[in-house]
Amino acid sequence: MQLENFAKAGQFAPDRIAEVLRTTRDEVARTVGLGRDAVMRPNRIASAKTQKRLREMVEILNRVEPRFGSSLIAYAWYRSEPLPGFGGLTAMQLVRDGRAGDVMDYIDAVEAGIHA
Image 1 (tube, helix red, strand yellow):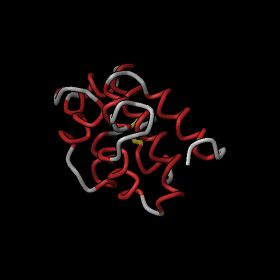
Image 2 (cartoon, rainbow, N blue to C red; image 1 turned 120 degrees about the horizontal axis):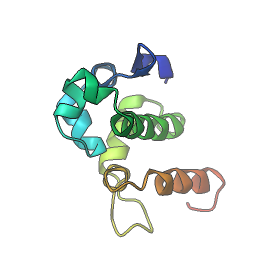
Image 3 (tube, helix red, strand yellow; image 1 turned 30 degrees about the vertical axis):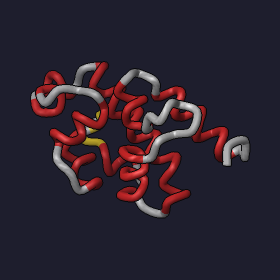
Image 4 (cartoon, rainbow, N blue to C red; image 1 turned 180 degrees about the vertical axis):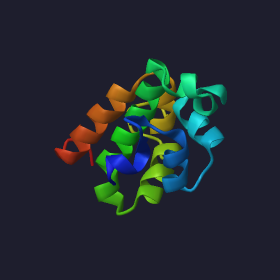
C-alpha cells in the first residue's frame, strides 16, 4: 500500500482513504474514533488530532497488509479481529481509545514470533 494513495496536498485525506478501502468518509471517521465533521470540513481534516488518527490507522494497515495480501482484508482485520491479550478488543477499538501504540507493539511482537 503506497502512502501517497492516502494523501493529498501533504496530509492524509479521508476521501482518498475511503476510496482505497471502498468505504465512506463517515465510516473512516468512525473507525478512527472521530466525528463526521473531522473528515468533512477542511480545517478539521488538517487538525493535528484528525491527522494523527488517520496516520495511525494507515500505519497499522501498512504493517499488516503484507500478511493478508490486500488492503481490504487488512482493513477487515483492523475492524473485526479481536486481538489476544486485549480483552477481546479489535485494533479499531484500541485506536479509538488512543491505544494505537499498543496495536503497533502487538503487530511487531507477532512479526517477531512472540505471539502466534
